Image (cartoon, rainbow, N blue to C red; front, side, top):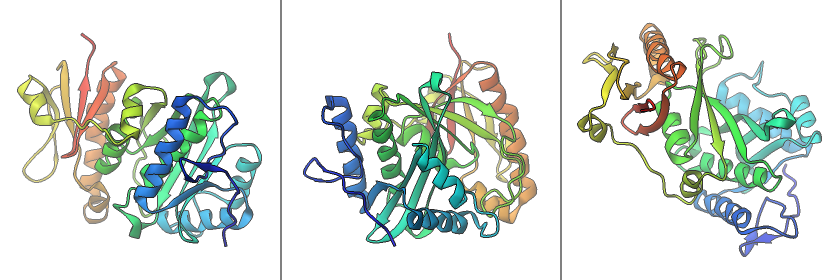
Length: 305
C-alpha cells in the first residue's frame, strides 16, 4: 500500500518535490532534471513518510542485501529519520516500490546531507532508477538550502564507481579502510568493507552537466598515451598486478565483476581488496585526486603539479 503526497505540478507534470513559492532558475532546473530522470526510468519518485511505505522500504532492502533477519534499515529508524526531517524516498512502478534512498543531515556547520543507503530491485537493473533517485535527492536538498551530499561506496565495484564518478560527477575525497567492519550480507560476503567517501557538490558545473545527461567518462587509453603510469593492473589470470605509485597521472584497475568473484573465488577477491587499498588508498592518502573513471575498469588519479 502506498499513500501519495499531494504536491503541485512542476514542468507540466506532478512531482514528488514540494516547491517553495519562489524558486530561482538553478533550483527549478534541478527539479525539472529530477522529473525528467524519473520519466526516462519509467518510475515516479517521492518522499516517504507513512508507515506502510517505510515497511516496504525495509522489505525491499532486506531482499536486495539478503538480510531478512537483520535488515540494513529498520522501520523504527526510518520513522525517526522522517520525523526529524531527514530524507527517505522511494521509486515506484505503479504501486510497487522498486527503489529507495535514505539520507540524514551532517552536523549543522557542515551544510551537507549524508546519503546512507540506496538500492534498486534486481529486475529493474539497467532502467536508470538509481539515477532518478539521486536526482530527486539533489533537488530535495537544494530546495532546503543544502549544497552538498556525501556518501560512501565500495571502490572495488566497477559499475558503482562509474555511476558515482561519471554519471553523477561525484568526487571521491577519502579512502576509508574496512569502514563498516565485516558485513555478512549477500553483496559484501563478509569481506573487509573498504569505502570511498564521495562529495557531491550540488552547484558544481560538472554536476549540473551530469544531471542533464552530459557525463564525461575518462579514457584509459588516452591517459596512457599522455604518459599515465599503471599503479595497479590486471594480469592474464585476472589477478591484481601492482605497479608504480610515483606517476603524476596514475591508472588503477578494478575487476569487472567483484561481486561474482566474491562468490567463486573469495581468496582472489580479498587479494583485490588489499591491492586496491595499497594502491588507490595510498595515492589518495598521499594527496592525489580521483578525477575520472573509465568504464572498462580504470580509476584516473592525478597529483597536483
